[in-house]
Length: 231
Image 1 (cartoon, rainbow, N blue to C red):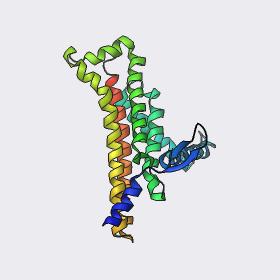
Image 2 (cartoon, helix red, strand yellow):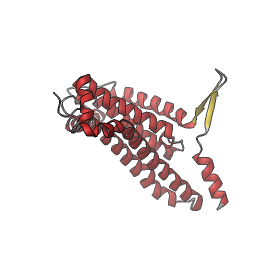
Image 3 (tube, helix red, strand yellow):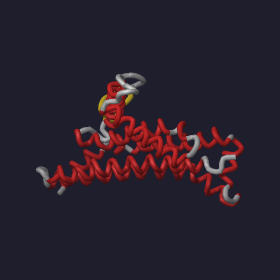
């Protein structure tokens, strides 16, 4: 049992992949390196998939991409409203990134979303999107006034939501990915043959995709709430 505990402790550490030899050495964690690799692969995939688009005769890949974009646009429009076009590209991008990050563990990489600093950065970006959109489309005075809705008495609670929302987004994604990672490592240590494959379909694939949907849905929901009752 102590061997399993030691193995799990090692796997939970956010190891340093390499150190950049400037300013006394800047350590680059495995999660950051995996994120860089995922971003490069995603950009290459997008360029290859969209290099020969034909409006009159779409192929299978183009038809699939158009269906995905149509679904994303419909989802964003339904949850955010008339200003959905400004938010759809970011929601689609973060959905692709989180899905790839959650699934990267299947290929033996360290899932970036297992690092709380990665999920915190995603959550903080979402909050900038939510309140930035509110101030942009409602105006500064209307955006500030929304903190006093529905009653001025609720101003402290509404202000606290600025911290609560990113914390909720961050810890939900981090906790679920970390929990799935821990369970899979225990299963691999106890039953290293065949059985982990079946559990991986749930903990790595299904749960990873579910957490992607939850993160994107909550971001869209919070953004829609911030843009409600536009003057």
